[in-house]
Image 1: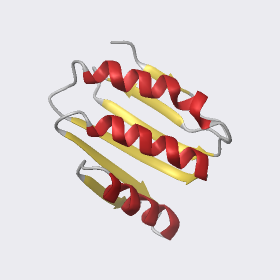
Image 2: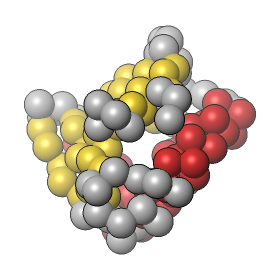
Image 3: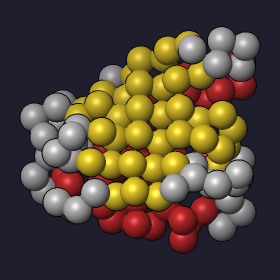
Amino acid sequence: MEILLIEGTEDTPKIIFDKQKEIFEISGRSLIENSLEFYKPVLKWIMAYSQNPNPTTICSFKLEYINTDSAKRILDVLSAFDKIKETKIIWYFHEDDEDMEETGEEFSELVEIPFELVTY
């Protein structure tokens, strides 16, 4: 399966999904106004991966900030992973960032995936 690598910018997150190396990570900032187009290849990759996933999938989110439109797409990403058995989400947030901690908590309540909130 092809590696999905989207380099991050000041307004877009870095995304790397590598089935062979078992790396599933979204990091940085997501301030995209029309996030549907940006996240479309991500959702497409997850759908393809779901046809033959690894025995376990651990997806890391290391987001510094997400706007409202991006939050909808992150929820779409989480919902797509929710359909894959043996998936776990690790939601990283800076120890002083209550907003991202609360965002992780809210997302964890909206999906059935096991969530672990981790400070750094």
